[in-house]
Image (tube, rainbow, N blue to C red):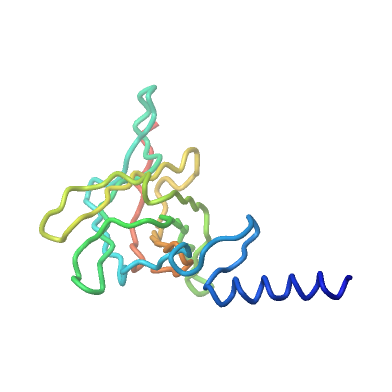
Length: 174
């Protein structure tokens, strides 16, 4: 009896495989059409305005607690900005200038969010874009040199990274 049951299960699995079905932890799902689809993003272009630094403090403290910029995820087909699904990620590094050692950097802040939560810009000269606001809270980087790296992760896990942007955070006024 156990042989017939095992044989029945094997036939069932073979039938599902032949039909293009795949199993996942949540049970059975149909194959390729339900799998995450990759996007057409080939490159990230970021524009950082001269007044990119922002204070998010409602109490009136004007010291920077983050920044804003404009970002385009460029399609490899059209080389214009497109809106996509996936994950937006920011990495902020403190630049360490040690006269006795090689210049280095230290990751001091990272954040991420679904692309659906990033404010969008209407289509323009460069296509469709995004305008993220990044809040780092009480991170102590006032007056420091920093590097900003933007990443986009597609639904399939492919990562596209921007060029590193070097900037200096303004000195606090308080």
